[in-house]
Length: 226
Image 1 (tube, rainbow, N blue to C red):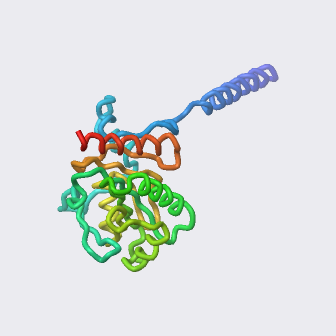
Image 2 (image 1 turned 90 degrees about the vertical axis):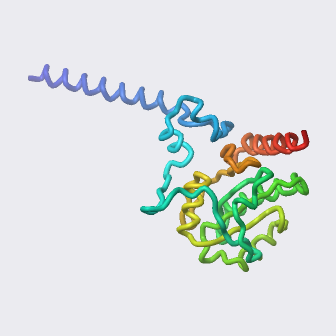
């Protein structure tokens, strides 16, 4: 009997040690893209992924339109000026989309400082920046005007949009493939090409990705000159 117990303990010890080795060894592996890797919308399918896998990477919490409604491909929202802005109005030049809310004390401020940096670098070059509120009940046009002034946001170049929250959820998920909800958004900039197609998703806190975003915008501007 003692022999059987001893053998059992030895086997259990071996299993536990094996699991520990696997856990420690696996923890050193990088899961998902590295800090320097941008998720490019047009490249994922070419990498052999199915459409379902592409959607899972680009928008892990993709929503669905209400019954009887089609997916949004364009939108209209209210700018801080009080004027309606359509996605069709943005065609012709590259633009960068971000989601935020004005009462966010930290991340949104850092994010909009990055947009301000982009605005200064591409001043007068036709590039536009689209900031969409995910707290539209608070972020009225008047509130957005005050908020935009904090960043010296150019009224023509950097637009601040608001509207109905359910509609903004759909704009985020269906038009820009970003999961958004009330006071919730990703830390990604969405780069849209002059034809209105998503080029890629750039994680702005990562310096390498931020530089790649600027380079890609410059590529579009150079192509416009050619």
